[in-house]
Length: 176
Length: 109
Image 1 (cartoon, each protein chain N blue to C red):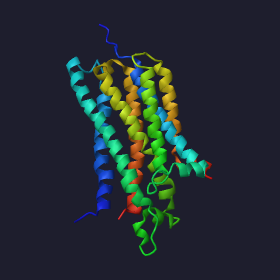
Image 2 (cartoon, chains in turn red, green; image 1 turned 30 degrees about the vertical axis):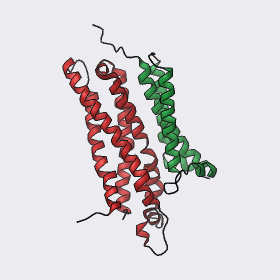
Image 3 (cartoon, rainbow over the protein chains, first blue to last red; image 1 turned 90 degrees about the vertical axis):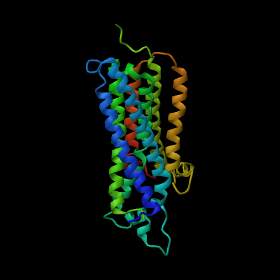
Image 4 (cartoon, rainbow over the protein chains, first blue to last red; image 1 turned 120 degrees about the vertical axis):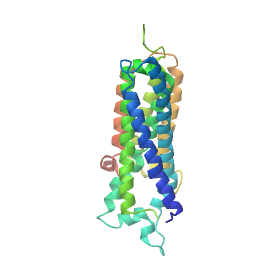
């Protein structure tokens, strides 16, 4: 049982960072949703805010690490141009485009994934910053809290699209 | 007891609007790259990554720059958060649309 360097980076990019992002999103969403003065005491709000700050920054940092490793480490292997003597299976983009039955994984899936994922860290960072600055005051700022939930959810959807297509594309044409 | 936040809206407004600007610039950069081969070349900051490197760098720079400027302008001020939220969600929507292949391929040269 062993992994090549490329497979290892693909796992770090897609599974390790992806799993942390998902966990952080679930925590951040639940924390913001239930941060209501009628549900939690002042002491409870303070305690929740601490967890919320950690959760939202974890989400933001994980999102940045995911898009940076994806774009600058994994993606160049995916889009590398084929070399004459080597099998096309080592060049995922060209492999997908060589067959009309698989070309949409690149022209639709990868083209969408590689762009939309960058929206996630931008939105997640804005949420983490606001949670940090406003702290326990957020419990009394319903409109702001709902806005943060919406931004966090959009970030999650953008990352989810990228993650889902990443899994499908890796299945159709793995980076070897 | 007044439970309202004493922290001015400007901090949140700057962070939220700049996130919208960053998202919008990403979508715009994707569309512009499809329209013009010159822009595609300009956005190719590193050959192995191709134009994606420039498109995402442009979005991140627009986001950070606008955040710094708005934070400076709205520091310790209350702003019209409702309008900022509407503008932000419109820009995020346009950003998402710009990154959607069936949309940006309409502009493909």
